[in-house]
Image (cartoon, helix red, strand yellow):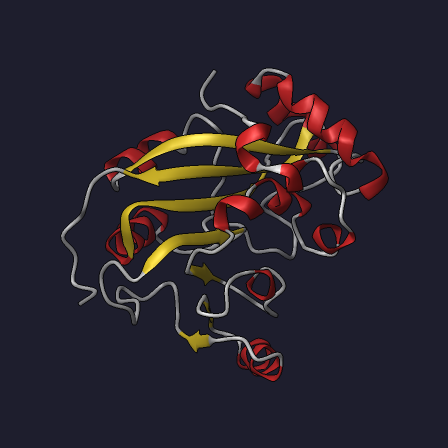
Length: 225
């Protein structure tokens, strides 16, 4: 298996089907909620702050959309305007315990460069949480990955995500899947939990999205300071 899934490590939130998680763009966030609890998180591509609102008050969201940022500020959330396609991010080294990249990596022009820029922002042994859509599988029978309105530039499988992570100072860890017609339904969340035991490659084929945790293992020298 490429990754591993440890629901016990994710905590009780992983098996309690709370409505707040199913109001999120990705309900699989419930699997990592306890890991991020109490940590200062940078949410890259935060949009309207749905994830950010569940994180600690000192967490920060980053987005390019003026209206999304304005809405976040009305909710009392800390946000900064920045373009993820630019080389420099406006933060100092070792500022954050974790970085959230939910459905962002497949949209930016240079994913490897973004992973490099994120690395020094994380404290030692910091967490990188990546949410990604699945290209192909059963969802691909009806869904055009590159021709839809989402603007996907890249596709990341469980295999081709490994090298970009490793060369930018991370080691891949736990993986959680959202199964088609199951993962987004609160009434079926326990079934989605049980099915996480299926081998990764088969689960990928049966899922619409997945979430991977990566751990920072080395420091890169960049010019974020």
